[in-house]
Amino acid sequence: MARPLRFRCSPRTWSEQRVRHEILQPLRSNIGARAVAPRFEIGGPWETHRFEMKNGDVALFARDASGNGDGAYWMGNTETPSSLWKTDKFGWREVPYHVSRWTQRELLATLHEEEPWLADYPHLSWYFLPVFMSKDGRESTRAFFREHAAGFPDAGRREVTRFFEDFLSTGALDEHRHVMSGKLGTSDRVDRVRMSAAMAEFIAAKILVEAGYVVIPEIEVTTGHSLDFRATDADTNVLVEVTRPQPPANRAAAGPVAAVRDTAETKTSGQLAKHGGGAVLFVDCSSFRDDSWAAVKGERPDVRHRPAVVYRARPDGSVEGYRKGRVPLELGDTIELLN
Image (cartoon, rainbow, N blue to C red; front, side, top):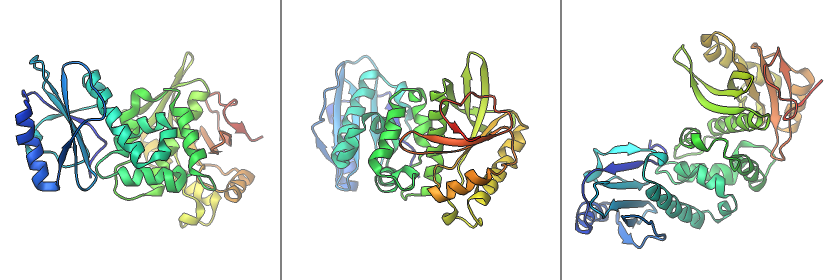
C-alpha cells in the first residue's frame, strides 16, 4: 500500500530532453501519460512539468535550471519512473519552499476540480492533501468525509467538515501534518472503524488545544510504544492516550456500556499496562448515537484505568462527558462535565 505523498529528490542535472526521455516516454508507454502545461508559476530557478495519466493519476516534476546543483523533485500518485527509483524521499517541509508551494497549489487545484465541495474547506484540504491525493487512498479518504461524515453519526458532511476545518485552521497541528494526516491511511477502501479512530485523535487534540494546552503527537515511551499526545502548558506535562469504542450496532458487545468497558479494557491491558501508568486515557464516544450515549451517561461505567475521561463530541462543537480518577488536566471549559 502506498503511503502519504512525499517528494523524491534526484541530485542529477535534468534537461528538457532528459525529462522527455527518462520520465515522459516510460510513463506514456506504461500508463498513457501526457505532458500538460502546469497551472501555476513556481518562481526561482525552477522549471516545472506536469504529467497526467489516462487513469486519472497525476505527477509533478520541478528541476533546477540554474546549474546550481539543486537537482530535481518528483511527486506523483502514479508509478515512479525507473530513473527515480533509488532516489531519497523527503517531506513537505524538507524541500525548497518554491517547490513545496508550487506542488501544493497544483495538487489542491486538482483536488478541488475533482471534489468541488472541498474548496469551501481550504485548510482541511491542505492538511489532508498527502492522503486526499495519494496513490491508493485518494478515493477512500475523500469518501470518508463526503459519504460517512468523518465518523459522526446523524450528521451531514458539511457540518462535520466545518468542525475539523475550524480546528485545523488554528494551525495547532500544522507542524505535525505528515504524521497526523497519515493516520487517516491510504487504503483503497473505506474502513470506517479505523478511520473514525484516527479522527478521534483530532477530536482529542481539539479538546486539549481549546483547553489551553500545546499538543505534540506520537510520544515514544520507554516500553517502545508510542502514546498519542503530550499535553503541556507552563505547569503541566501529561501524556494522553485516545481510544474510540465502536458503536454497539457494529460490534459483538451487548450494548453501549459494554462497548465502552471492553474497548477501554483492550487499551488498558495492552499499551497502557506496559507503559506502567501516568497517562490519561481519553475514551471518545463520538461515534455513538444519542440513545447509546444516553445509556453511557446514565451508568457512567468505569473503564479500568484512572485517570480517564469519557466523552462524546458533536460537530456543533459541544462535548460532554465524565471523569474517572484525578485527571491532571483542566478541561472544564471544553467539556461539559456531568455531575
